[in-house]
Length: 274
Image 1 (spheres, rainbow, N blue to C red):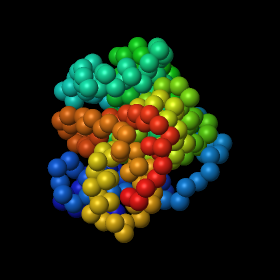
Image 2: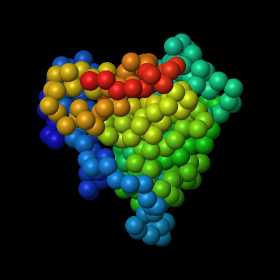
Image 3: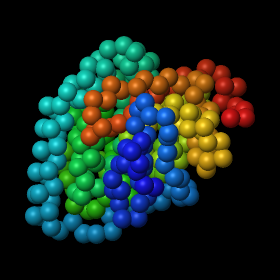
Image 4: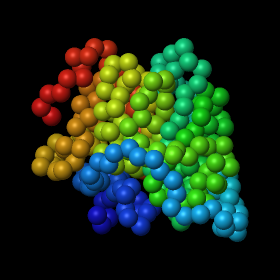
């Protein structure tokens, strides 16, 4: 989908376009959301290439170190950290954590950190948040386009690369932060569907696209294919809380938000006409 003057185009991070997104800029009226692709089953995954190029690995390590320093020194990062340490985000995180001391982080759709700076910036932010906050536990990362070199570099920063393509269908048995900037609506819906119980949804913290914008888009374009694939996104709006981040630069994230979910009764999970 081509970017217009009213949309923020996120670079295609793969040759096959599996995770391509066009995200609306905040405050703009026309909202061209991602095209949606056919759901695939979970399956064992491994990189298709070989990790035997020490020069490439060294160069990528250097690029990541530069990006980590760039994010850490940015006003964007300082502002985000401040938000996580104050109401209302802190209150929401504490509610999800409850009696647990740690919250795992799952990063879906990181993209190619070797070929593009945006994925490196996003991964850098996830790494820095884990370093900063003791309540963030294991950091797991996945994208089907990752190369063996990229996997090695990601793991060198203390992350784990998933060996299964979960298609977003991770069951949150314990408090889990899903870090999904610029993912497709289908992945968000997959995640919500997999956790569509009162107990599991209360374990989920999601960082990703604004659900409010999806809702506005669907109300504007009722015949869009986004409607069906965003079914769980739209249904979750009645019991979710969206806290928009104070985006200081589109270089980082654009219109992203924190989402927490607090259904109390199973009847709240029943679908009505959207």
